[in-house]
Image (cartoon, rainbow, N blue to C red; front, side, top):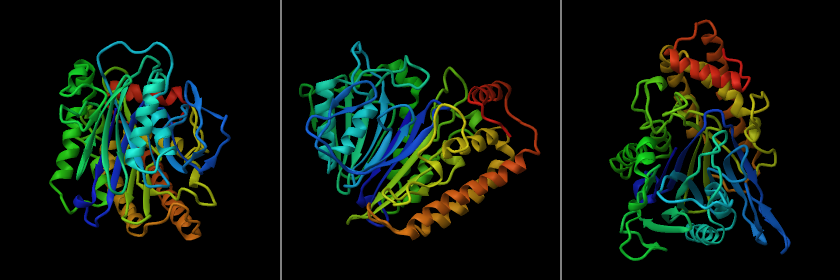
Amino acid sequence: MCDTLGIGFSYTKEGTSIFGKNSDREPDEAQLVISMPEREYRQSEAVDCTYIPIPQVRHTNAVLLCKPFWMWGAEMGVNEKGVVIGNEAIFVKGKKEKTLGLLGMDLLRLGLERSTTADEAALVIINLLKEYGQTGPCGYRDKKMSYMNSYLIMDRNSILVLETFGRDYALKRHSEFAAISNVITLDKGWDESSFATGTDPRSFSDLIFTQFAGGKPRRECTIRNISKRKGKIETRSAFAILRSHHGKSPAKGSNADVCMHAAGPLIRRSQTTGSLVVELDTDNGFKIFVTAGSSPCLSTFKPVIPLSPWGLPCGIEKGKAMYSTDSYWWRHEQFHMSMLFRYKDYFPSFREDMLNLEQDIYVSTPFYEWSSDSQNLYAHSKRAFDLTEELEAYYLARIKEMRKKAPMLYGQYWKKVAKKNRLPLA
């Protein structure tokens, strides 16, 4: 489950374009932030995607990706040309192909690596989809999980929604804003499609899976928050939208929460394991913010500099199948899981401290060029991660003094997750 938004310059306070996404995956699936430079390849080379190799192109763009640790593809990302893409699982009727192909996340990464505009990215995905299909297990532990994909693709001037059905597709251009979730959003009013004129893509929806996924109310929540603030939206607005809850606590939430919290192995199986917000100005400037950890309601958004000579800070590119102290994702996960057992007691004060810190980080983050090698910018990025970890360590020390409080089944579920991953709960 996921939620993605794209907001054009007519809706933002500064005339910029803003992208945001929560990536909702299995709760112990570490999500990494990686940066790849542009590269040149020989004509005969291949690229090993998650399940199949395909021919490599001669040149690939530099990209920054947020990706599950075990797959080649990515849940969301941005390239040096200012193209940004996020995907959503959508559930459709019909038999799936039996042979392995590209995952929707592979298509997303390939679209970023091989395009200079949003339209080019859509065409890359469409052409690869036709040739290789989208098949294969999409889950980390749940290898029965597979799905089709909806994409929100944007650049400094365009917002596109591309929805895929097997090897077919429908595409619509949006002039002001768009939001997608785990529900088919396009109707007969698409702009381009492999279907016959008048086909309504919603007719392909698997209604049962779609209903349980909760995408419709989440998308409606996102659209409400955007539409009522025309001309006033800032990057911080996207942070706030991605933190939206209906329930008062993670234990009492639902699949209608944009900030998704897992609560058990049956209905609420997904957790927001990473979040990305990108702001693009009208020139060549970027502001790229990541949580690099789960639950944006319990994490700051921090700036990253894609091609810093000093690399990415604090181990955000590291993480595997078990808890490890060299991984920022897992270090934050120790705080996140421990906090879930004292959420009611400590969340209000932590939220205030977290938002104050984030405000300080946000207001001192300038637009920067992709290839920036400014030591000051890198130091600013690292400081944001360091201060966030210091704040989390402070609260970890405090909550150790309080016994764990959580509804019985909810608490048992998270204790099992922690034990499975050898994560020491406070």
